[in-house]
Amino acid sequence: MIFLGRRTRRTLFACVLICSSPAIAAQRASVETVEISSRPITQFHVGHDETRFGPFEFVGGLEMTSPTRDFGALSALRFLKQGSDFIGVADTGFWFFGTIAHDAGKRPSGVKNFRMQQMVDASGRPIDRKWEVDAEGLAVKDGIATVGFERDQRVAQFKIDPDNMKAPVRQLDYLVPARELRQNRGFETVTHANPYGQHAGGLVVVSERSLDKAGNVYAAIIEGPHKGVFTIKRNRDFDITDGAFLPDGDLLLLERSFSIARGVKMRLRRIYGESVEKGAVADGPVLMEADMGYQIDNMEGLDVWTRDDGALMVSLISDDNQSILQRSLYLEFILHQD
Image (cartoon, rainbow, N blue to C red; front, side, top):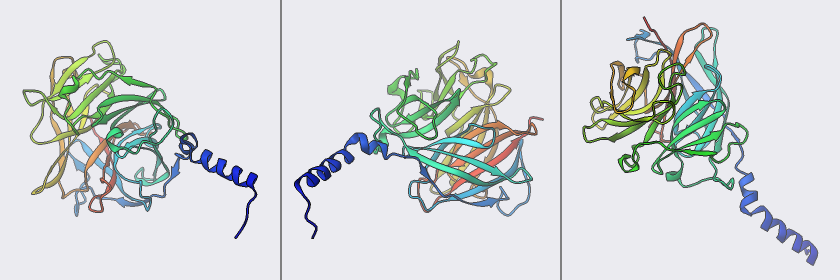
């Protein structure tokens, strides 16, 4: 047994109090480096070698796994550097950052420098209550990340600092009446409109499945010269999980359907840009649909970017719900405009 003097005991007791205080505990919400193992996906249609699916050409993909318990539940991804460095949000209340590596054939070959950080409150303390940090949608512009949250419905903005993401700097008015947002069916899409179009790069938000009386999906233009609420025509039993504007001003939506009998399906739909306006019912054609015969899972995140050779690229990620029955996937396609 070791006997300590009175002064030493007081010093140790003070250290325990200080180190367990909220302010010091908050400093421990550090960036966590996460080891990612990636298995290449070379066929989109399982057992088939075709690469063209409507206007989409499959480039390649990755099935990602990690021993880290916090990994997974990836809801949204946006590139900070075209096709390379990215930021994302998980619906468990985490930010994630990393880099997609590509091989000599421009196919995705792995994920490097993957880090995660828990979302924090105004005091810098990690938020452990999932209903407060159910992050689903993400947009990025000029060093600001705009996030759509479900359950505790809100749209908030954060300064991007991969080494120290802090509390939001601003809450935005999302215009859609709060009573119209359904529990766990709120804003899954947060995206900036075309900077040269009618909305001058303003933010557009789209709910997953908050429906008006006509059965259409609530959405809104919340920035720009023509702010206002609009809806998107719901097509069959698909829900909207993400979206991004294309260079021509149209809105590309990622949609998902699930049933016990059929399993999960994924769909990409093009919404005509001119129909994205206050009071309108926006609509457009389905470009591609895939079921469990393809390399898909619970597809939740989408981004559009331009490759160094000028190809218009679409990247998708899946939310595995941190379930051993699901997968975290990253997929890349070329979107041909001809």
